Image 1 (cartoon, rainbow, N blue to C red):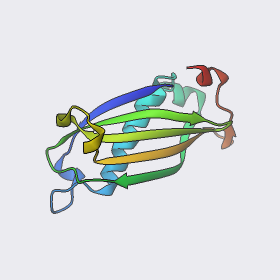
Image 2 (tube, rainbow, N blue to C red):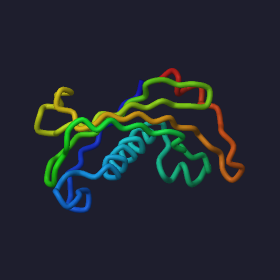
Image 3 (spheres, rainbow, N blue to C red):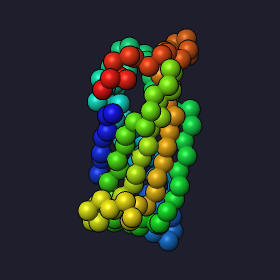
Image 4 (cartoon, rainbow, N blue to C red):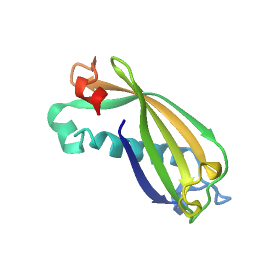
Length: 134
């Protein structure tokens, strides 16, 4: 199965008044990692714009395990957990870059269900068969 990884530094706009990362920032990090993951299948932003086939998030769950803080560097690992006919299940780990990516020090874990939607009809499309093999 495909996987991707991004590295992010926690900026001031990612935090609340106590310098702790807000929940919306975690979602943005997950979205960036998912975009990197889907790009490995050829779904670059240019490709999406030309084909009008969009990966649409149907569900997101995030478990917050320990706080990330202003200035921290983190690694977001994304991987495909499984495929269904029209759904792709993705898992994410948000880890401190300084801990050698030890899962014991994870800031958060997330999962998403993604559906490929053909625009302008808005109808779901089946997952391409070659994706199951990669």
